[in-house]
Length: 510
Image 1 (tube, rainbow, N blue to C red):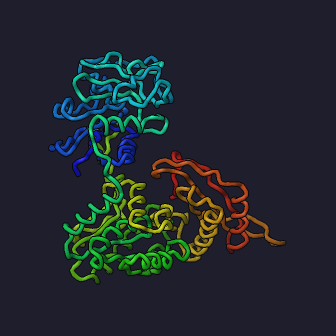
Image 2 (cartoon, rainbow, N blue to C red):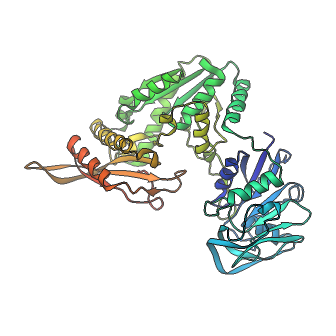
Image 3 (cartoon, one colour):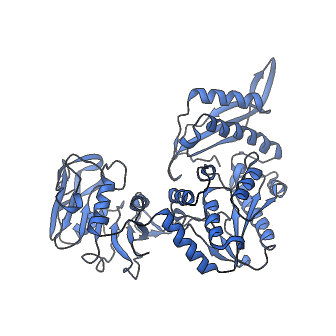
């Protein structure tokens, strides 16, 4: 790829959002920690400096060497990045009289400059900083102001270096996408050619070259990431891809059969392994959430290892790892902190498996994975599927797990999810599910007193699962769902709806 944008991360909560906004312009971008600059900068046609929780006036402020970038490669500093370019190049950054946070409007905008072309006075922007640029850096020319911030945007004369004290990457900045397009396309001259179709074509070619005639094993989960990874590999190596779909006994009702049927229609070489009894035996009597997760992970590895040995001369393990799982971020304290999750479809496989790893989606965000899948003609029922936790219903049954509890929760979950689909609500929800609580409560059915289980329904809206808000589902829908569950699922006499947001709560209960 020769049309790359480098985003240097100073620890902002919005850094991933910058990358996503750039990619929405069909321009490839990648994130690197500020203190791990690539040795070879020749492949980057533009550089963006992110915001930061730090102050440039602090002795511990992130302070990279930009001598090979500033004045040589088109450069945009956002918030902290703009203050950094000012503070260390002849300008002056001082504390604001008041913290500048939230919506503001441009009171002055030089729309004749290429950088602000098509952006007028009054345009809404989003501020988030406690310092402000009092004096511009050497050669600085003011391009925009708000009522409270004189130097809201500037450029450095004789360079393609720009700084803004607001965040163009957040939706609250109405012309943020236009501003990024002005910088990247009109000023840096990047081509908008990074599309799902181009990604598929390039990736398939690279996979063929890398893997050749060797065999690849992929653990399918039924989810979006592993399914799209499987289709890319299938396009590249065909029957040399061996997919394994394990039933851990904690899937949704009829999911094992329905997912296998879906994969069969996609032409994939898939083997279904029903190991539900093995998982439930291992989980017997365990109620600690973390221990349950570890048991499920361990047994999965054992089952997967057993099955992989049946694929003679397999050399590769494929995983549906996506970009947010890999990004090295920067901690709020200013030091680099690698937050690379072990959130792979197969989990942390042991060294003794001795397989080379291939990750076709490792540079994509979740929304991009869906677009790539759509470009390959994959079914919307797979691409639009809600996220489902790896341990499945095992972490939605609070306390110990028994086959009877799994059966109850599968029925409850099916009524809830099917109801969301029938009412046209499924696609408006990011993730939904039911929790079986370790609570028995008194109820009355007919003339009889009951003492049965309570279930909690959960539906959230989110973009990446890092934060989430509960969904305000219609009362009529909740009423019908509650009635259906209590009337049709033996062992449940009470239904509650979880109205907690993340944070402080999590999406799952365990």
